[in-house]
Length: 108
Image 1 (cartoon, rainbow, N blue to C red):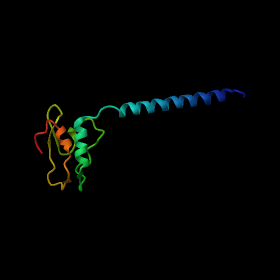
Image 2 (cartoon, helix red, strand yellow):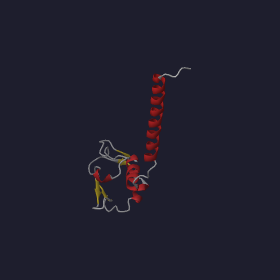
Image 3 (spheres, rainbow, N blue to C red):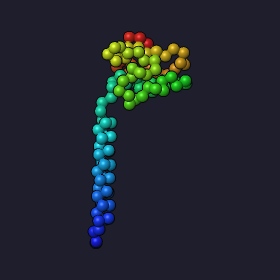
């Protein structure tokens, strides 16, 4: 086998691509294993148990760090969920027992 400058460059590029690919995969795995905010998890469980015909809960994002910017969520100055409000949204379904994990909830 004759090793030319072009062959060497192609092998280098292939190794570099493989290295970058593995780094990307590792960083994705690392990020996905981080614990989720327990309030976000509780709220997503609540959302999953409800029928939301008007899409009132569409901005409830399971990958969010802070649910305080979500529709119908009220938070304390410390960014803890203190209220859930869904007036006239025609929500129906079963309220998840995860609501018990919202330990600062004062108003529904």
